[in-house]
Structures are given as C-alpha cells and as structure tokens.
Image (cartoon, rainbow, N blue to C red):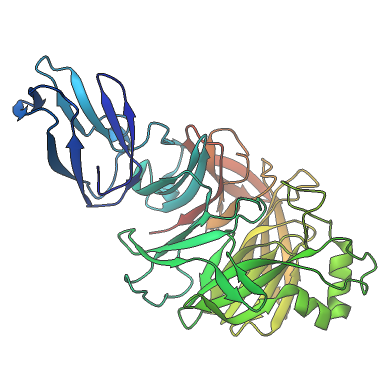
Length: 450
C-alpha cells in the first residue's frame, strides 16, 4: 500500500514496486503486508527487522527536487534476506520509462523545460524534463495529451490552489481524432488543484478535447469542445452527407460555458467568407471510423490567448486557417490563410508575428511558418524542414537563427522527441536533438524557456 500510485510485480521470491509518478520534494508513505507463515528477519541495509508471521511494517521515502537519469532503473529502496538476496525493491519509475539522451549541441535549451506526452506500449506518460533530468512525470493507462504550462494568462485559483500546468486524460475512447476527456490543472508542485470534466455548452454536455486549452483575461479556463451536429449545408457547393464535428471554443466557470464561439454558427452568418473555405477543404473523418463518423469541419488543434493582442489565436487544421478572435469570443478579427498547410501549434510571438508548424500531410513535406503583419496584412514566409512530421507536432523559435521541432503523431525520426535546427538563407541544418527511448510518439513537445 502506498500514498502514491504504484504498480507491483510479484514472484515467489521477490516483490518489485514501481512508482507511477514523480513530484519534487514529495514524501511517499508505504505499508508492506507480508504473507510469511513463520517469523522472519529482513534487512534494511545492515539493520535487521524481526517480523512475526503475517506481519506488516511502514516506512517513507522523500524525493529530491529532480529525478536524475542515473537514478532511473535502479531501486531506491531494497529489503534483503539474511544472505543479502533482495526480497522487496522499490523503483523510482516504471520499467518502461522513456529515458532521455541529448545529442549534438543542445546548449540553447539546456535550461528549458520540455513538456511531452510520450505514448508507450501500455499507456502514456506526461513528463516535464530539463536536460536529461525529470522534474515531474505521471503514467496513465489511458491516452494523455496537451501537457503544457499555463503561461498565456494567470488562471484563477481553484479550491486546491493556483494552477500552473495542465494536461488532459482521454475519457471518450471512441473518438481518436480529438481525444475528448478531462483536463487536470496542476499547481507549481504538480499537485492537482482543478479538474475539468464534462462542460455544459449551448449544445449539451461534452468532454473538452485535448489539442489545447488556454486562460481567459478573467482567469477562467478556455477549452475546445468538439460537438457532433446535424446541419443544413445546402448553401455549400459540396453539401455534407454526414453530420459534422463543430468546434465550440468555450470559456468555462464552474463547469459551465459563460462565453462560446461556434465555428459553424459563425460560418452560417458569414457565408460569403466561409463558403470558399469550406468548399475547398479536404473532407476529414475520424480515422477510427472513416465511413460513418462526422465530418471534421474545423479541427481546432491549438489555442492561445495573447495578452498583448487581447485576443485568441485558434488554429483550424481542416480549413488551413488561423482565426484571431476577440477576447469575448464574439468577433472574428482576422482570418489568416496558411497555404493549405494543415498546420499545428500557432502562437503569437508578438502583435506582429505568428509562427506555426505547416504539416502539409498531403504533400509529404513540413515547413516552418512565419507570419508577419505588414501594413495591416499578414504575409507568410515558409522554410522547409529536412524531415516530415506528417500530423501533430509543434515548432517554436528558440532565437532569431534557431528553430525547435518537437513531437508528432509518429516520430518524424525514430527515437527523437525534438530537434534543434539552425536556419540560414532559408535552409535548416540540424545542430542537436533530444532522443527518447521506448516511445511510439508524443503529440507535442513544448519547449518553455526558464
């Protein structure tokens, strides 16, 4: 028994316990119940512990500020028999923990946090790492997605305290494209202070989805809710034969939406603008059910609140556009075409610059998208990556001459979580990378400078 989540492997002669999470400076309590039929002596180092039949004993362990790579894979506590043979061992991570290795020149990100959600054979991790050290991890048997630092705006404290980080645990396993589930908001010590379960929207009660969340100017969580809807699409040249998945951007308070933006409702009210966008886009269904699942008309896959712009930036992959929405979620201030890029992870760097990852999945190429506002119009500069990320992933500027590329639904290079590229005269050259063992992919790998 433990105050933290553990998994246990028992054999007739040895019990191995694996911690399923790490938090800095946390004290974890254990109680071990033995099934011995006669008195026995076990040893904690050189200290003997005399146990009666069916005895139990208790102890505690305290973590440090960071979990070093060198500590992973070795027991942090062992109880032996009189001959020094291990009887009970406690390990700081599960056996399949995805170890990190730095390759090449990674000095530019040496002090930066990387937030990732690597998928392994029997679950998903949420990991905050710095270099090869681990500041936090948790493992879930379900899909985890969207792990990030809430740096867009301060979030209102919940009953448990001030939120700093967030990730989503998928609950609705029938929709693979958007991974609906419950957002978990964590404080600076990675303790859960809020949970966002189903959200009451104008369309009904739904789980929010995992591509992204942000924080409103009022400090409320803002989430993406994908709503199945039967709609009248006769005004389009290519009417939809199936229901649609609408993107509903919802600011929530106490589980209820207090402000909402529906992409479909906006499109109906602005047909002149919306018709060419919807008629031109490829039709996407959920990969798990491509024949009968709703048509994914927008697929909002990133969201940011910009305090400088006092506006939201939403990436709509299906239509290959970025939307700039007013802070009250009522007005579309700008529509920014992304050149059919099926983009991910759009971010304001300043009021006049936006960056994103252009996946160009149909063209089998990925590009760094750099938008600049000049004389009231957004101009796009594209720089090809040497690798193709296909779907998902994120990219960020490290500085004026270096680009970070991370994550992706299917590692763009086997065993690589993220790569640093130098950029010169429109050409990217790899200078360093963050390798990760034993993972399939990580939806993103957010780089957050300290």
